[in-house]
Image (cartoon, rainbow, N blue to C red; front, side, top):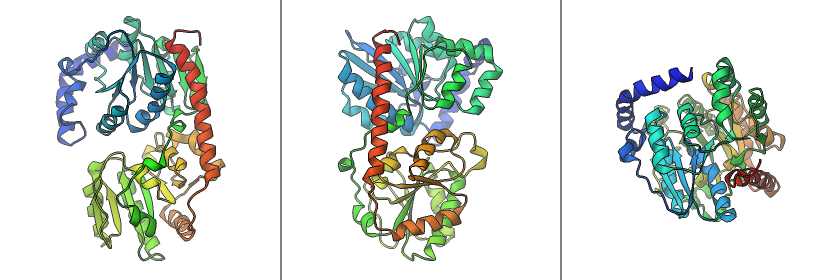
Length: 427
């Protein structure tokens, strides 16, 4: 299986050019930097002398944001470190451009496709001291090449769903070889820990989900529409996917029966869908506006569609009630759910559908503490939202403090393992 994968990825390399250019045309790739994924000449190596380079690969926005506190803590705990952070998605790349400016010893690049000679050259040129893969970023060629280059590798916030575990179990020989190369596993949930242990792996730990770690400074969250968000009744649908658009519109129509001036704010997971959502909304004769960053919400608008990256906290800060998407789509039930932790840290009451497998453990904690609630359809969501809208209070410091304490403990416990790994100490 491993040999077949290596041969296949090599043979597919020419076709990846067509694939990435297509993605560029449909605006799913960085229009300037997309070649970093396919061309060695675009790797743009920035290796600093007399320092250890630590490479973090975090595929998307949630994974990227989760490692920033880890990098900040590493800078406190160690001297002479530099960081390479790679991501895969356009949205995470745009966010990295902003966030890594705050860390003077970190560079961002797009992760090259997992083709043997690309990965081999990437490792040769950058020469990382240690590699950290985040979440479910298990790339066989990268892991095998890291072993050839004698670079230790860790999987942090590791996450295996039941479905992905069964796939690896089917190829158990290959799984044991690939996973056996990894030196350290820090799991995001106990389920993943139990799956990995079935492969007889060493150094498998569960210390909590590092997505709880990220600190949020409310004072630094600015929104040009603060006046509207404070004085108007609104609810916020975050990280929604295509089949949830009509769900949000129907929820709005139901709420409108009781609250004539209600505003629904939708932040789609993929902002290229904004115009499509607007067209759908207008079919219901709703005054709809697409807003870009620092753009004002106009008067008498019913539905607002957020059309810029990194917007969620701008609205979580003011929202009493939030629906988190990718949770109502049955065909995505095995990979359903988006990260609700930011909303929880900003005192939002969180609603979600039945399909949250990606964040099952997180939602369990939130539900126990009455921070989140599962809903079955738009009528149930609208009735819960109506109750929230009648209650003027938003803040609940007790619950926020609980989430922050959990994050701090996770950071402390996780950093012990990461520090020892970087210092080549026994784990």
